[in-house]
Length: 236
Image (tube, rainbow, N blue to C red; front, top):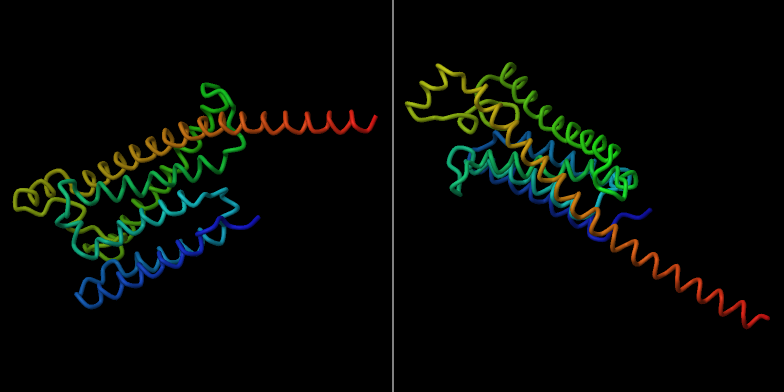
């Protein structure tokens, strides 16, 4: 089975973006996300290599890359000061979690029942939910492990300004309530919202397109039947 058209270009362009971000980081002295970008390059190649095994689609592949790129843009200090009214960390966790739900959902696309509300679909939805949420938990765990090994800082393996409140009042809150707990709690919450949204999005698309496909298949089957019937009549 050949990869869908455009996957090679998405792979090349994504890797080029990570290289550009690493280069800019070196120039402006923001190297905290260099390791993250290197990991994203490896993941991109992994997605490309295993594309067919995951039953992936170009849209899911692209969304996975967008999720990684939004995190890599933290190089520009957006985790500290977001360029939009919403905290940048909220954006990266939502966009980062959603495509993994879509990925696992699509992996089981041949196993879903035609009817939406069935026990089998409920079990599959739970498997997709916990699988996608598990990816987010690994990220949270890697942040904790990085903090234990390297201390405070920025990037995927550190706990820094982007993970808490840095105002004088915020520092007091961090000391009293524990910034790590607050940050991890919000991260998991946003991951959960992203996963649920991804499952709902795929559910709608799954049954809309399946219904359309069934209509097309029925039409093609009817055409073949009429052709066979016509050929049989001409033969005798």
